[in-house]
Image (cartoon, rainbow, N blue to C red; front, side, top):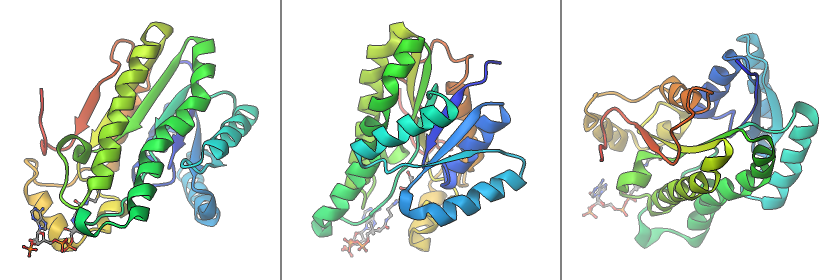
Length: 248
Ligand code: CAA
């Protein structure tokens, strides 16, 4: 297996951690991008990963800032090599019904969850094109596919993310690069733990598999999309949601 350099944004988060671990276990050089104000907790996370046998690099990376992404991607290239595998995983929620949603909650979610895909990918795409090889996996959500009460901002951003996937997949298909989306359902992470318990319970009861997903179940799908083995799937949106939403 060829050893690659992988950047996972939001790598120290619930789903990001499982993705970092899986890619590191496969022998890749993995760098976790973290939100710069979270330096202390990111370093503690890195130590914990190390104790679990996973050596993972850390990079401060504010995905909502185009210029910070430019700085971070160039520092990562110097320290670890240019990025071959990019997983756009950083994301936040600011749930609330539209009638009460403050502009700042719309803007925060759109810039962290959607602008981020452009901000980071724009700085790695030319390196992948030069090499003639690249894997990009965008982590969206079932709620970008079907909409979710209380998530006009999040659903819009995640739906937009897959539009980005489809367009960039077309632009890079003939250049050895695949670009795909993974749309998780409700996964056990701090993000879903923050939901009101009764709301979460009623959603989980509506999942055909009658349980929440595990971060490792997302990581498995990402690892395949990021592998050499995935040489002919591009522009796809892979649902990993326990049957919560099905489509053609
Ligand atoms: N469908 C229809 N009506 C609903 C509803 C639903 N799912 N949920 C609430 N309502 C109704 C209530 O019954 C109530 O009705 P009345 O006004 O007639 O009494 C009304 O909507 C409440 O509206 P409010 O604007 O007052 O809402 P609220 O302040 O009580 O809270 C909320 C709304 C914050 C959005 C809350 O429902 C919530 O947190 N929902 C969860 C949203 C969610 O799924 N988030 C996912 C987070 S995890 C994630 O995002 C990861 C991922 O990718 C899956």
